[in-house]
Amino acid sequence: MTTGTGGRRLSVERLTVLYDAQCSLCGHLRQWLLKQRQLVPLDLVPATSEEARRRFPGLDHAGTLEEITLIGDGGQIYRGTDAWIVCLWALAEHRPRAHWLTTPAGRPFARATVLAAAKYRSLTAAPCGDGSGDGACAVPGSGD
Image 1 (cartoon, rainbow, N blue to C red):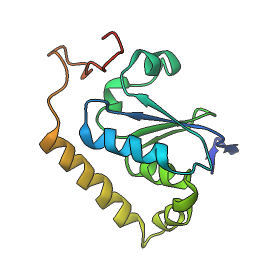
Image 2 (image 1 turned 90 degrees about the horizontal axis):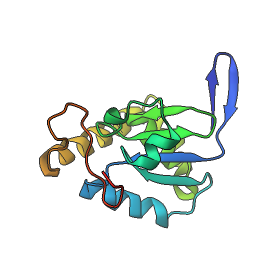
Image 3 (image 1 turned 45 degrees about the horizontal axis):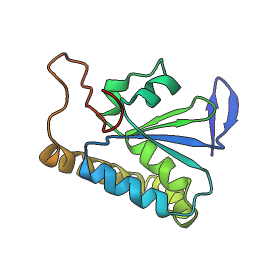
């Protein structure tokens, strides 16, 4: 996948998926992604973890708990619907579907999937944060 940035085209050779380690749906999707044949390698890193903060110091980490976030090796940032489409694009079996989801006919399906996942998370996830307003959740094994 390439993305125009200031007139430049950037090739994506590796992606980092930031996921909510406290969310059962996110954990399930993480396992599913790991089982797929990847055309573009995916690094799955818990959102707001020390590793995520070390890798991406300028990122709004609280925001990564609000919506799926992918980061390309060239600094590209994908969120929400775009992030889910890029995830599928990285997978051998799902790349054709990802291309379709970028079309005017497919885009509403991608958006509906992301909205359904967000609704499920809101109904099943425990509240995050300690009241400090940063939205950070303790990630198992992260030392938080």
